[in-house]
Length: 135
Image (cartoon, rainbow, N blue to C red; front, side):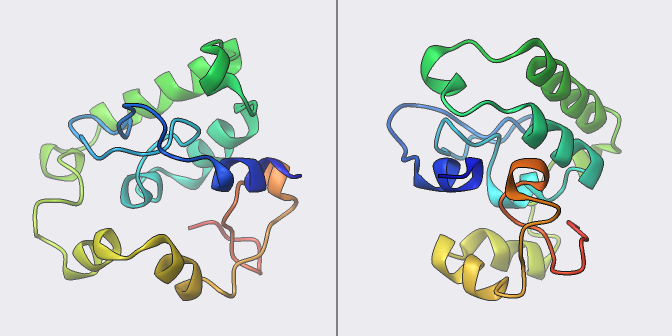
């Protein structure tokens, strides 16, 4: 089983919200955040968080020091954004963002059928474009 398969297979088994500042959306503990906020992070931060994530760390409660550093870097990036951007995607300012939030996971996956792992799911995360972009 790949890391991506593991993460996608984890359910919402306890209270755990998206790590985007101010977002209260519940996500499975194996995930950093909700889909809209995950994709708001710059690709380099997403790759770093994904690379540092160790399957099961959400169960043991012992993420690696590298993962904690990556998560803190993401929080610092969010804090450095203009207030309207840092507010997130739930402010109604973007029709596309609102539609993304309403999509079920299966709709989201169908929308991204052209996405394949690059260079591997263990390096790039569960969703990247066939040409290597992860934006």
